[in-house]
Image (cartoon, rainbow, N blue to C red; front, side, top):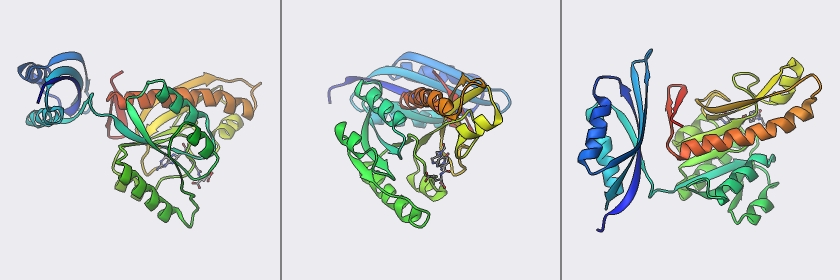
Length: 285
Ligand SMILES: Nc1nc2c(c(=O)[nH]1)N[C@@H](CN(C=O)c1ccc(C(=O)N[C@@H](CCC(=O)O)C(=O)O)cc1)CN2
C-alpha cells in the first residue's frame, strides 16, 4: 500500500534511567521518522520519567507502527500510548441544564479546534435537545433518579459502546457517575467542576465560596474518578472577586472560567499532551 505522511504522538512514562531519550529518538530515526516535537519531565521524588514525542513518518500502516513503538518502549521498561493523526476520536458530551460549556465546546469543534467527532449528546434532561438538533448532533435523553441510576447508567454504557466512544466530557453534567460506570466504560471521562479544587468540592460551590468570602473563584477540569471532584487535575484557572459580588456575579464570572478551562483541557487531551499518573497529571503543552 502506498506510504502516506502521518503524524504519530507517543506519551511514555516509566522508571527513569540514563539513555531513554537517546533510545526513543534513535528508534524513530532508524524507522524513518522525523521528530517534530519532544518534551520530557523527570519526577525526582518518584524517579519516574515522562516523555511526549511527536514525529512524522511515511507509513502505509500507522497502527502497526504505533504497536511496534509501544513494544519497543516496553523493552525500555516504559509504558507507552501512541496516537496517530489518522485517528479521529469519537467523543460524547454529557449535559444537564446548564448550556454554556455545551455551546462553547460545540462551537469550538465546528470551528475546527478539535480533531474529533461528536458522536452523541447525552442528557438527563431535555432542555438542550433542540439546541443539539440545531447543531445536527444526535441527542439522547436518559433521565436519572436515585431509583433508576443503575438502569440509566446501563443505557448510557450501551450507547457509548455502540458508538465506540473514546472520551466522555461532563459539560456541567449534574449526576455523579458510579464507580461501576467508570470501570465498565474504561476510557477517560473529563469533568469541569465550578470551583478551584480542592476548595468547595461537591454541590453549590459558588454559594460555598460566597459564604466563605473568598477573593478568588475558580474552575477545575479533571479526569473523573469514583470519588466526586477528586480525579487528576488537567487545568485550572481563577478570577478575582470582591465583597461587591453577590452569588449571581460569581456564577456569571465562573461561567467564563468554566468554558475556558474545559476547552483547554479537552484540547490538551485530544492532542495527547496529558499523562495521568497516580492522582496527578503531567501536561506537555
Ligand atoms: N464519578 C464522577 N461523576 C461526576 C463528577 C466526578 O467528579 N466524578 N463530577 C460531577 C460534576 N459535579 C461537579 O463538578 C457535580 C455534579 C453533581 C453534584 C450533585 O450533588 N448532584 C446531586 C444531584 C443534582 C441534580 O440532580 O441536579 C446528586 O448526585 O445527588 C455534585 C457535583 C459529574 N459527575
